[in-house]
Length: 260
Length: 242
Image 1 (cartoon, rainbow over the protein chains, first blue to last red):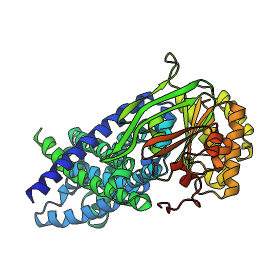
Image 2 (tube, helix red, strand yellow):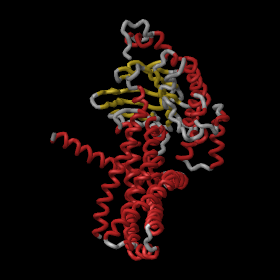
Image 3 (cartoon, rainbow over the protein chains, first blue to last red):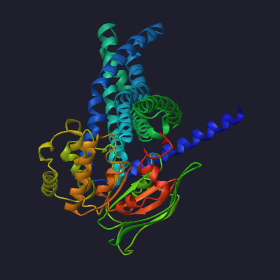
Image 4 (spheres, each protein chain N blue to C red):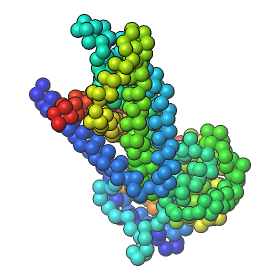
C-alpha cells in the first residue's frame, strides 16, 4: 500500500516535471519558426474567435442566474442596492476567468489534444522531425501564445456580458435601481480586481493549453490502448486534468492575490 | 560497387530487456539502392528510424565516408505516407521548403509546380490527400521527400498492404525516379523476392544482426542455408511465425 502510494507520487512528480519541460520547450520553440504571424493568426482564430459564441452565451446566463441568486440573498439583509457590486466582483475575480477557461478547454483544448494525438498516430509528428521542422514550434508554440492572447480577451467578454446579465435580472426584472447597480460597480471594482482576473486568465491559458498539447503529443505513451481509442482516452484526460488544474490553480492564485 | 555514402558501425538498440538491433555494420553505397530484408518484427523499421535520428541508438556510429562532408540531407518515406490531411497536395509538398528555408513565394511555387509535373501530380495540386488514390498519395509523399533534394531517401516498407500489381507499380516508381533524380535509396521490406529486381544490394536482418550482405543475384544463386527458408517459405519445413 505504502509502496504503491510512493510509486504513484514519484510518477506524478515525474509527469509534472515532464509537463513543465514540455511547456518551457514549447514557449521557446517559436523562436526558430518561419511564418510565425500566420500561424499565430490561425491559432487565435481556433482558440479565440471560435470560442466567442460559447463564452458570450455562458457569460450571459451566468450573469442572469447570479443576479437572481444574489438578489434574494441581499434582500434578506435589505441590501439589494449592493447587487451590482456583488455580481461584478464575483464575475471579474472568480467566475469570469474560471468559467471562460473551462469553456475554452471544452471547445478548443479538446480539439487541440485530439488533433495532435491523431497527428502522432499518423506519424505526422515523426514526418516533421525527418523534415527538420521542430514539431513543438510548428504545432504547439503558436497555440500556446494564442492562448495567452485569447484567454484574457475572452474573459473580458465574459465579464462584460455577465455583468449585463446581472443587470437584466436585477434591474429590468426585479426592480433594483439602475443607477445604484452601475454606481456600485463603478465604486467597488478597482483596476487591481480586473488585473487579478487577467492574471488568472493568463495562468489558466498557459496551464490548460500545455496540458492539452502534452496529452495529445504523447498519446502513444500516455494512453493504455493505441489508435483511435487511445486518442479518445488522452483527449478526455486532457479535459479532466485541465479542469482540475483550473480549479486548483484558482485556489492558489486567489490565496496569493488576496494576500497582496 | 561505388563509394559509400554512409557507414554504419556497431549500431545497437534495446527496448527494456529486448535487444532489437545488436551491433549492426553496414555500408550504404552512393547512388545505390540498398534493401534490408527480414521477417516482420525483426527491427527493420527501428533500424531505419535510428538512421533518420527518429530514435536514438544505444550504441554505435553512423558516419560519412567523407568525414569532411555534412551529414547528408535525408528524407523519409513512411509506411502510411504521413501526409498532412488538412493540407492540399501543393501545401504538403511545399511544407519542408516553406518551413526550413528562406525562399520567395514565386520560387516556391515554381519548384513545387515543377516537381508535381515531373511526378504527374499537377492535376491534384489543389486536392486534399483523402481525395486522391493511394498510388497518388505515395507519389505526393515522394514529391515531399524530393523537394529538398535529399541525397538519401529512406523507404519504410513502401508496399505494405498493397496488392501485387500495385506493389510492382510502387517498385517501378522508386526505380524510375531514382534514375531520374539520382538519389541513394535505403529501403526496408519483406517483399521477397519482388524487391530484388530494383535492389543493387540486399542485407538480411535477423535476430538483430545483418547476417547476409551482397547483391541480390549472388543471394539467389547461392543463398546461405539459414536464409533459404525465408526466401522460399514453401520449401521450409518450419512454419513461419506470424
